[in-house]
Image (cartoon, rainbow, N blue to C red):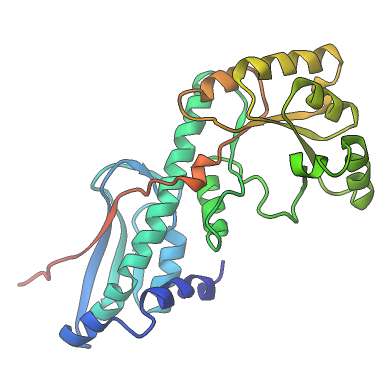
Length: 280
């Protein structure tokens, strides 16, 4: 993560300056401000907020750490500097931290649900992210206790239905293995038979896509009967929510990927308030 990457968001918000502040606040005015959580959740994005503030000459002091669980009213970041600079970064800081904290909070909630049923399954994200924000979204998932999954198409081989419409699964896996011996090979399967075939063809992971809980159970049993279960990691994905997450986790799958973590984010509510000056 570079400061230049983050400064693009400031440039988007103030392409020709902050005309309100420039018009009414004397340039020499300084202030202290506090970023607070306005609801319970997991804080993320402090590092990025501090980088932005530092670039604008603001002294930013974290009051908690990224990945911390906080309660409503908790101060999370103390800012001191030129008032114009604080007002310039205010919305960008809150947007970044609010989104990242929302993702981290949602991820942590899913991880807690899985742990509650004594499952070892890991919660993972997907590539369903807003273009330009993937690095931040994936980092927030990690801070919430989840796995980022692939950051990009370059990271691992995931042979999906559209690939299999063009190349048979056995040939696809063989080609992928020949292409690179260092990349994990995962195959998407929508039926029990397809999952068993992918495992027979020595996929490293099998993604059971949009399978109801009972069908996932049947698929795991079929893999076990074929002596294939221990040689592959099983990931489930598609239509998984807080309501059915524990049912999938109880089956003994290895990975549970949830697109909702990043494609339907509810920001954590945060505020930035300039504090009144202390007078003697």
